[in-house]
Image 1: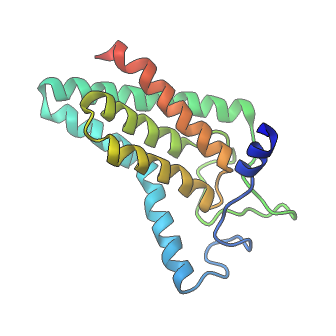
Image 2 (image 1 turned 30 degrees about the vertical axis):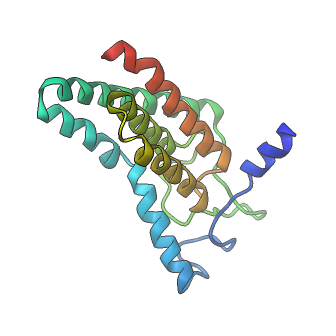
Image 3 (image 1 turned 135 degrees about the horizontal axis):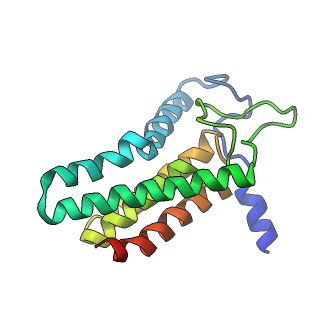
Length: 178
């Protein structure tokens, strides 16, 4: 049972099996590709560091939350990068060894997803700090994680591991920082 779940998560869930930028994608598929490309950037460094910087600038309690958010994001990123260079799992490719990525990849390693890690770290930290953002931010972090598999830059298990890493880092460090 567990093995079949892992196999399902590790099957590439890309928009096209042709691979490459835009190959074979037209019409509705191109709109879907644009959607996933937009969503995936919500897990990028500028998008995930901005809330911490904004809170820091506000001062008071928000400054404390901003510092915690930035530290949790940076620490989760460092752990993700250490795992990538330890596990050295290659990114998804087809049977001929061609990349399935529909966007540029930041490095050659797949496990865990840094975008999923960052999105989860930010969502969970803000949820722990304020509570009310949970209904919006937690599903959004999951969609960011899914985008990484849909765009062919990660396996589903890479995205799931990134989500878990971001969640675990936030839950562990937030009480120590606030």
